[in-house]
Image (cartoon, rainbow, N blue to C red; front, side, top):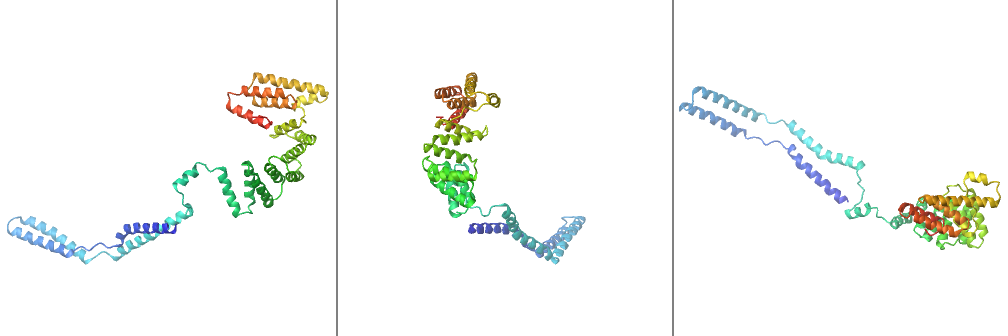
Length: 368
């Protein structure tokens, strides 16, 4: 790199020197003596022409005056050569240009340019520009950074969830442990660590993973991820009623628009502990003093009304998902399956709505 800089500096200096060199030189002195001799010869020639009658006397006099003026100017020039001050100024200007231009260029380039930027060949530029760096490549770069900087808590915090996403659960466990070590303990980090352990075990909530979820709940009793996996642990251990109790408690306190509600509702259906579908606020007030039988009948009426509306407006994806979920909660799996088929037929010609429907069905634990 330094060799290249040196070559460029020499080339710049040579170019400037070639242009400015003439400024430092004095002009070659004219041969004033030979010029005066020519003028004298011309005067003699005029005399010969006048004597031979080739020109008239007035013309001869005029020619003598002009040639004499030129002769005097030539003699004066020979006596007064160019002053040294002009030559000195030219040489000073050349020196300033020779030194000043490179210095000025460097002064502008250092703050505005990129003198430390490495080589970036065209082929490499093409590869980088297309955002073709795969997720694995980016992960490898972060891992290489963390190998050299193992105490970078922020790096571990960024890397760990990406490792979970690409299925590298064992590495994710290590990354989450390091994140806790260097960033401090929190409910989210403990729950994330437990999730990575569960993924590494093929979806089984191991005793070690359950310990992490318990720690997360101890730090934050409302942590959604930890409570869900604690319910899953109970389900896997055969304690279905305990799992249902955990998930039902989550739904009772969950906001109506909580994005994880469908997942918990599907889990409740799976263990047979799902409550009746949530009712609108007005219906909840009306059903407050009803008997269980009347409340159930009202819920069936509302579900039937929703089904009838969807036959008229089949493009309502959210409506179809509510209907399928309601049938699942009510335990009517045949109607849930039929509604799923009807929903797909209704939005079959709209790719975006079909995608939304399939995503929603997956969240309900169905085959999207």
